[in-house]
Structure formats: C-alpha cells, structure tokens
Image 1 (cartoon, rainbow, N blue to C red):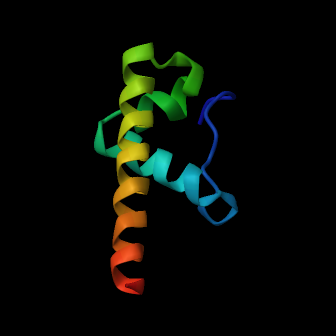
Image 2: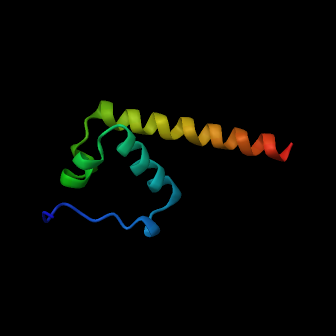
Amino acid sequence: MSEKEKKILWEELSPDDKLKYEIAQELGLLEKVKETGWKSLSAKETGRIGGLMTKRKREKKQEENCKNS
C-alpha cells in the first residue's frame, strides 16, 4: 500500500461517505480514489457520483414517506 493509499475504515464513515464510496465502486472509480484520492477524479466523474447520491437520497426519502403514510 502506497503512502497516499489509505485503508477505508468503513465503521468510521458517515452515511453520506459510505454512499459515496459505494457509488464510486459501482462506477469502477474506487481503485482510482484509493490510489490517488478524490481530487484525482475529473469534474465529470465527481458530478456523476454527486448526481447518483442525490438521486438515491431522494428515492430513500420517498420510500420513507410512503411507509409513514
């Protein structure tokens, strides 16, 4: 493991960070993030992750609202 490469401490991450890592993995970007950090992602890659995070949060909120109704 290189000096920059960090081990992900899953239990210490916030729910938002867990979602961000999960989406990065699904998009095939997790290894790039582990090796060179989040700042190495392009604007397009970062935007894609942010968009998917927003979409999933919105869907989760809708599901919760439906369950409570």
